[in-house]
Length: 264
Length: 300
Image 1 (cartoon, each protein chain N blue to C red):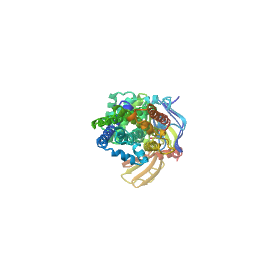
Image 2: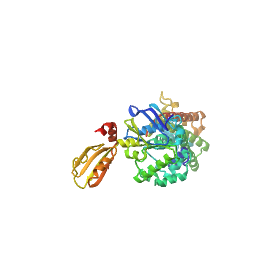
Image 3: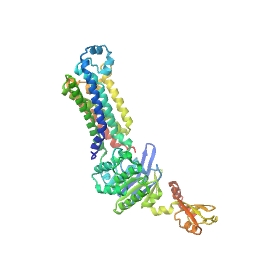
Image 4: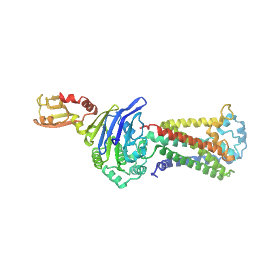
């Protein structure tokens, strides 16, 4: 595993990723286990109808039927918890990739080898993609297996599509974190800037439909869940927008890192 | 293009604060060049410019005849580097770290790595988080040496080594030179540089104040000697000796400062029963003072 920057970085991701997978699958399983008791109680839907719309939009994406499989999974997992987990994981990995090594002081030794700076960034980006994809696979399998276990009627393919969408959202924010780290070399800055962007993006998407002047299409979250992949499958245009965001951020990372002085 | 490292009017500012200013330097092939200066003088700045970790504000720097920025990969392929602030991956062992860097460098002869580890008494099987800074440093030296590079750029290579390892390291440097390879090392310790280098560049406040052969530097260097005698010596016993000044005689203890050779003092002391001779290595500021006012001091 210690033969390239890519494999070394993947190697470093293994241990924390294992815990992330265990934690996320556990969260999914516990959540889905509640489904049978909720699906038998239509009064939950009445509850949703009685909630103020702003509150419903802010934390449940405006879903009004908690008791259908798709409504349940969306409102309990995919609208808030899943993107939150992917955001936190991705910004952690993305900010650590370059800025983390730079702050720890290992970057000099790494870049003293005959490897171009852009190449190191590119390999770290691929490693991050691998890490987030593994988390995406865990989301897919964890949800599909838990749903099957409680007899929930949901398409495994649609769950895969929603999981891929979450993976791409994570990758987009991870790439932003990577880019901020590459441009400024400060890990904390990268974390907070990306987290602030993520939170802002979440609320722009959530409140856009009911607040005049707020355009949800400006938010990456819109392209993550706006087309409701659990119901309709992936919207290729939305997938393209998320991938495009990652590539633009990657380009920014490559260019800014190539040009600047490295901190000791 | 002249030297193995060639800096022309090299200038680096960090924002408004000075790194180095108008530095001209030429390190020749096959020599051990010492880059001497106090902390903060600009030694690491120069080294990191040569490695293309930072970019000059003005002037240019060429390494192995190549442009430091454009040909960075080629330079790094042929150069072994030890950073001044050495940090390793805590979870890796020395062996894993060297294997990783070896792969990035394009493969190494592992027998040579083991030979170096034995000579420097480095432990390869312990993770870095359990190693002392001196032992980490040995791994740092091994990774710089293990590819037998044409050029070694070493930022404070011996500051954390114990005396025995330091001697072995000096022997390694001499071997490197014997093979026609070049060493550029920085240090803030004068005797260290005197012991192993051929030529020395002295840097102070971002400017190169002198480049001298070690023998010329030694002739100018200032030493403090403290001589303890069995009995009080006369006040004028050490007066008027060449290169000797600030002589104080307190009963049986004589203190003086010597520029250049200690011969005259030792010969003068030989007339009395000597209990002890203590030599205090000068700190760098004193070297600079001696250097700046060099000619005058020798005269008076």
